[in-house]
Image: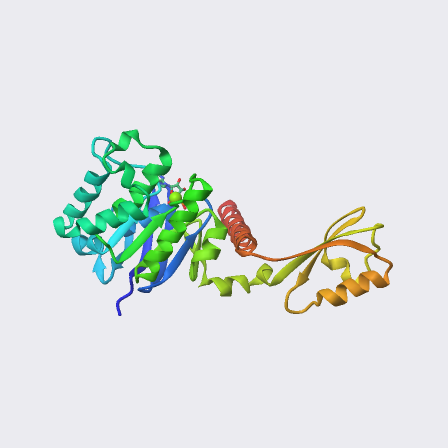
Length: 321
Ligand code: ADP
Ligand code: MG
């Protein structure tokens, strides 16, 4: 089976600024793949290259085996991209936009039932005859999703589809994207909302400064470093005297409030609490929380930033010599 998307040695500079420095990534058919990274990491640039909208300086991308530059029509036929920016033609109605989009790929009337299904699933039926310029931001976002799907592409790439979208629409978009995945579409999702990636994606790549700094299953990421940790927060009747063997675990302590960071695999919460009680602590309230994808994300990007800084320093001292 050909990969849904294969990315080989992609590099892209904007003037002096390296946006992507040699990306290697293979996304398999049927995956729900998350592409995460802080602002400016290069996610949208990579997506624009996959979509054939931006030319890479080096490397190649293929969608279901079709090179996005030399075999643009076939790669585009298999690909639906929801762009990050709200770009659209203000003069057409919603239904017209979807039909025109399908028409680009040679689809005519036989595709109409699918377009009606899309309008319905994205709650756009009432607005089908409205002009794009008359729609609210959230509506436009939904039209962009519908437009990307009008030709029933097998691979769907969504660039922050829920940014700035209210909670209710976000949830209904999630449901819709999930149903597409269940029908067999490959989904690639970039998002700001780590909880969204945690809820939806099976495998995740984290991009930072144009490089893939982590590529793993969601569960694999959650087992890494801080992913293994949990925090235990407690309120006590009197300030606790923390025994020596737990001193390193203190994350926060003021007056009657204490937060400990424990290792999920190695430490036993029950034993820790017993130890505190032996030291005279009377616990009034207790809350435990496992690390989530956001914690892992923050730790990984922070580590890669500090590595970047130290390598920059080497270059700087090299220049002084
Ligand atoms: P992300 O989508 O992860 O936030 P982008 O791909 O938009 O990141 O941007 C990656 C880097 O490339 C950033 O430093 C950004 O400023 C730069 N960049 C993106 N597009 C352009 C452009 N058209 N011209 C110049 N610089 C750009
Ligand atoms: Mg972006």
